[in-house]
Amino acid sequence: MVFPTLQFVLFFALVLGLNAAASRRLAWRNAVLIAASYVFYAAWDVRFLALIMFVTAIAWAAGLAQNDPRWARAAKIGAIVVMLGVLAACKYFNFFFVSLQQLLGDSVLSRDLAWLRIVLPVGISFYVFQAISYVMDVSRGEAAARRNPGDVALYISFFPQLVAGPIVRAADFLPQIDRVIRPDAAMRAGAVVLILSGLFKKMVVANYLSVLLVDPVFGFPEMQNAAGALLGVVGYAVQIYCDFSGYSDIAIGVALLLGFRFRRNFNQPYRATSLRDFWRRWHISLSSWIRDYLYIPLGGNRGGAVRRTAVTLTTMTLAGLWHGAGWTFILWGALHGLGIAVERRLALLQFRRPALVAGAVVFAFVTLLWIPFRAGSIQTTLEVLAAFTRSQGISPVPLPVSVLVLLALGLAMNWLPVGWRDRVEVRLSGWPPMAQAGVLATGTAIMFATAQEGVAPFIYFQF
Image 1 (tube, rainbow, N blue to C red):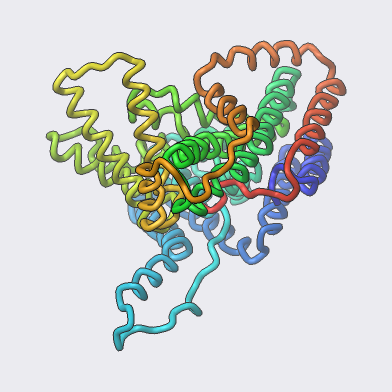
Image 2 (cartoon, rainbow, N blue to C red):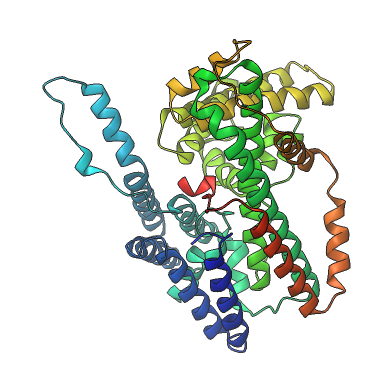
């Protein structure tokens, strides 16, 4: 079940009504949301329910064990190992065996291992990280262990952010399930603006750029010239931003209508003037998760320059591997880590650049690194890079005016002030509920009418 579909609209309308009807009793409200979340997840594949329930049970038990000093540390480590093991088995098992087959080649040890392939459960990276967050937050005293397993189940499975984030911290989410918050006019107005802006980013900008520009360039890189390859790469930078930030906007807006507040997940990332600044703006929930639960425990900024560089490279390489089981993702993460290490060294040398130059360098670096991220293989990555050396292509992608307009819109979202959103929210907050609902319904209908036929999955669903 995907957000920008009629199926989800009907599902959410029903959930919204049931949530309002059950809001008089906290236990009923939470039960409705757990049931809705499991139905939502089962719509992808009912077999995945057993896995998310297993992860929930491990996190719940490990959380309770933190109240007993005799078992706290062992339970925490054991739970994290089990949950990471589940993630590794589901996400990296196929990658391991494909790599093994390639290594063995045509030798006598070669075997057909296709029957061992595992179906990747949708959203597993996100809900496993949330489960780990619960155990860690309880261990650190930032959240209280929950005796009611339903509380942990709702936190891990809450459907607005279940399959592609944002990754919500236990310390932020759990207090919100202890009381029923009926969305007021300001929350409803914020939700309307977020949902409609998210639909526009995904259904108009991202989807059309994908079909008209990005897919042809990356699908046939050997036929492109330098101009086409450059526009295709920039187009993917805009597409992935609009696709993922659009999903996050919708998820945060949907949660608001149910009475839950999530933190912002994107903050105009292509305005960054350093790679560290980029990662403070891009996929903020993951970046902060990696910082707090991986980078700092590994040593963070402690120790000498060599140690800090090693920790940075390790952290970013693992972040790349989290995004996907492939050498291109490992390369993407490692190069981001190397870039951050170089930036840190330049800062120590007091090497200063004008903000405009720094922003241009960071944008170019980040955009070029989207090539292996999108390409899917080292071979395709090299073919796209080779296209930059050709003045003419065999069959370059035609560029209608609409593509250039979409590129300009996507880039403008990163550089133009966003105060208009606050002004629209303030104005909408003065409207009655039915008028706000009418704006949401009308805007959604326009997006559906404008969008292409079919449902394009969100990019981050594969992670």
